[in-house]
Image (cartoon, rainbow, N blue to C red; front, side):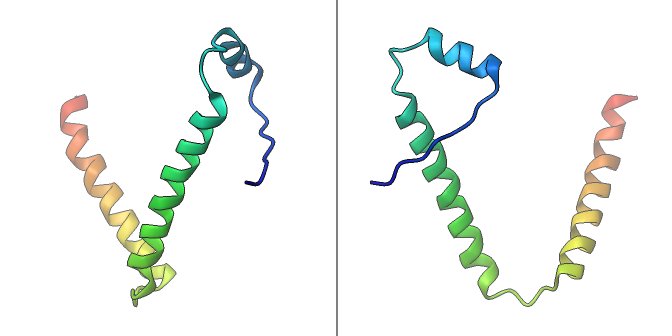
Amino acid sequence: MANMTLSVPEDLYRIIKLHNEVRWSEVARRAMWDYAMRLEMLDKITKKSKLTDKNVMELDKKIKSGLAKHYRKYVK
């Protein structure tokens, strides 16, 4: 198995040091594995896509605009 060194902010490091009962390398490994699996799934989904980057950005803008409009009702 390969080794990896991570840098974490000081405030996170203090919390980690307070909880030495936790196997932090296992927590990090699982988090990275879960994220990698999601990326792999997205790669499989988008592999067959015919959308261009421009199409994706247009859809992104429409979705965000629609969500913003929807949730503005609840903020007023």
